[in-house]
Figure 1 (tube, rainbow, N blue to C red):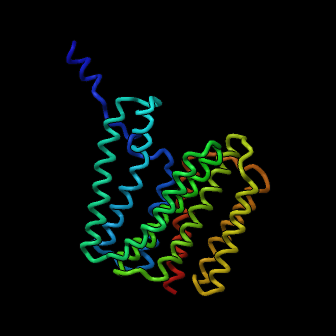
Figure 2: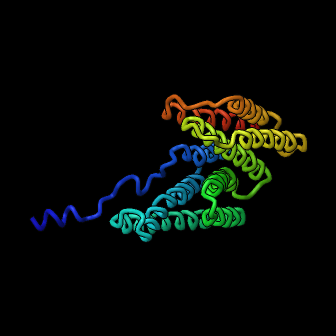
Figure 3: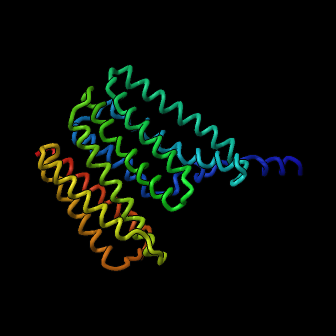
Length: 273
C-alpha cells in the first residue's frame, strides 16, 4: 500500500512540460532555418549545430514557464523538478552547440548576440507589463522576430563568416513571422467572436509590403520577395472586410505552415535567380 502511494506521488514527465502550447510557433523556427540553408546552398556539421542550439533555446521557454509557475504555486508542484532538469539539459545542449561552432571557427556567430540581447530585453519588458493583452501581443511579436534569427545563424555557419545577405534574409523572415502573429491572432479572435485587432493586422501588412518594396528598390533584397508579402496584404484585406472564423483549427494550423513554407521557398528562389 505504501509503495503504491509512493509510486503515485512520484512526479511524472508530461509532454506539456516540454512542448510549447503554441504549435504554430514551430514554423517560426524551422522555416527561417530552412530558408537559411536554402539561400546558403550547403549543409554541414556547423549548420546542424545551429539547428541543435536553436531548437534547445526554443524548447527552454515551456519548461521555464512551468518551473516559474510551480515555484509561484500556480501550477503542479511536482512539475517543478522535472522542468528544472529539462532547463539544465537544454541549456547545456545549447552551450555545447555554440562551443562546437566556435571550435569549428564560426566566430562570426557571436554577432548575433547583439540582436539576441535586444530581443531578450524587449521580451522581458513585455513580460512584466501590466496590460495583459498588450503584453501577450508584444511577447509573441518579439518571440517571432527572435526565432527568425535562425536564418542568419545558419547562413553564417554555412559561409564561415557574416555577409550582408544574412541580414537581408533575417529582415524578410522576421517580417513574415510578425505578420503571421497578427493574422493568426485575428482569425482566433474572429473564431471566439472577440474584437481583435483587425485594423492593426491590416496596417502591419501594409507597412510590411511597403518596407519590402523599399528594400528591393534600394537593392537590399531581390524584387521577387515582394510577391509573398503582397499575398499577405491581400489576406489581411480579406480578413479586414468581415470576421473570418476558423472552421477547423487543425486544418488552419497546417494551412498556415504551408503558407510559411511557400513564402520561404519564394525567398530562397529569389536569391538563387
